[in-house]
Length: 196
Image (cartoon, rainbow, N blue to C red; front, side, top):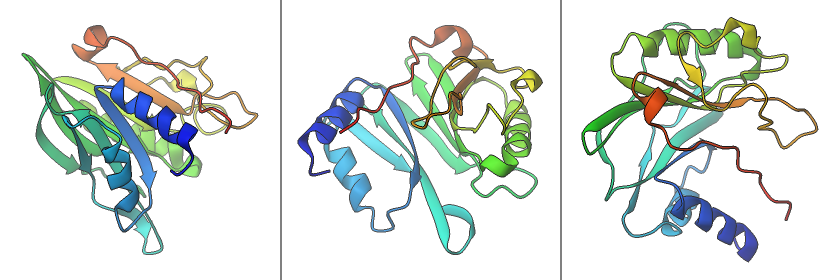
């Protein structure tokens, strides 16, 4: 992150977010993660998942950067799902004031997105309480038929959003909510990455 404009963009994004979900982290040394957290205000913290992947050669981590003066974390774990998921969802329980919710950070594989979305949402929906599912679900275009819906979850990032940087116009990245989270969320939007 030596480019000042890139650093400024990330800095503004982190400062303006109470929770920021990150995916596809491949840096084994954690140096990138530490540099990114250093951009955050002093009251922010980071939670990292274990390195996940179904091959020994390709592993990723999920992360959250969050405002620790506002939010408490009571539980983190990799969601135990049936079937062969390359990167199972990372489950984190957050609380703020008298409201708590469980966040599931998910990155599905394009070729098996429909199956991974189904098993992840079915497993998560067995748990009670407010839930937020966030990530690169590959939940649109040729990877997932949005007519299948999202198993009782409401899509905050809808079907008409373009979350890609490519020429395609697809809503691969999603935020899905259920329970009180469906009425309590304030804002959710796609942040366009500038061309540097």
